[in-house]
Image (cartoon, rainbow over all chains, first blue to last red; front, side, top):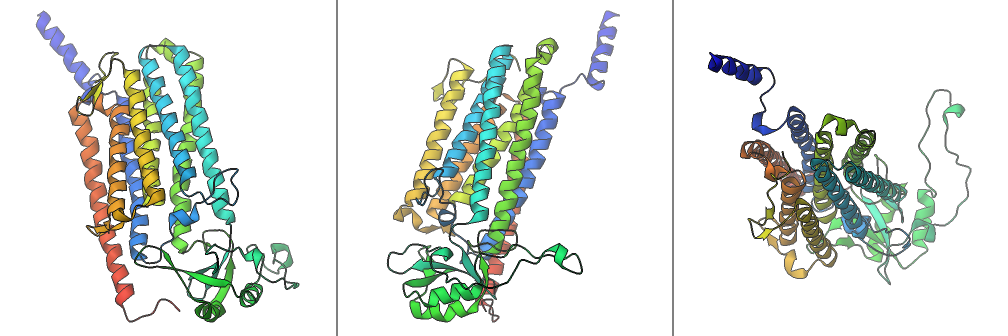
Length: 326
Length: 127
């Protein structure tokens, strides 16, 4: 008799939600579902980047020449160091997160609080670093011209092989051209911000400066951008149609238009994940602080949000490789 | 997952730890070393690694492999996959590896094809 009763209870457990597939709780499994699907979203972005890059294999911008800034080191060519630093920040905040999870397993509220706080700070520093990176990318440093066919021409000093900024050679040719604003028009059109120099000013400055040559988008067999001779440059500069300073979604001074688009979408989507991770971490942090999980008897919520946080770190590892290294 | 269910060894049991915290710091050290190697290679770009191997530069293959190594340790030790049932491990990893490899393969082959068309075609794209 007693045997039948216990069997009945077991069946209720099995079909009434008491069963845990893979010995993982419902919340954790759902977090894994989300992570797998989100990983595929990032895959879509990164593979699309790979597609565009393979399609323009001989003219894709070289990341080392684009991301050369480091805080407080103005004018110093420091490729890669800054993103490496960002990577370390994110890995470190991952470690503090996993230490918080570990402390949660031992029901040590104080340590969970401390490590969660460190994780939040790490995440915030990372998002801030990304904002700085975006700022540099959007503002640009040297400027370039774009031709009718969408090619980007950058300017190099033939003597010392260094990039030259537009402001260092463009002649000043004052004119009355103003940016057209909505309020001046009949209809609600406006135009985007005008570049600091007109095409004529850049061409004029280029012609009167015999040291300047053009650096094209094309890459030679060794992986360096091809530079034109002075004669070729003088001929090619006449095809300039736009002055490009920095980057937006339409054109950028670094090269292929898609490069900036993918930069904005991939690092932006990742940065958005970090940002929401920080927000979720803050919510969990306050829940830890007021003792919600202490009363609940376990800190599994910290573990679940930890899974998400590590996933964000994991994605950054891939973004770092495919955007900055390869 | 109880307190003592962590598997406290990495590198297939080559390194064993007394506590989970020790393991975490060791994994951090390992990930940092791998990242430093990646950055050092990315900055110096040794000439010997710039040779083409399987239609990509040798250095890029090294970057990809090191990235996968890092991904493994983040998933296995930080995301506690090492402590999960093998069924859960498999359903996450096999799904992702299959779908990602498939998508990467078809899109990269297609991108390469379009490159050839533009490069060898009669139409000039550079005007």
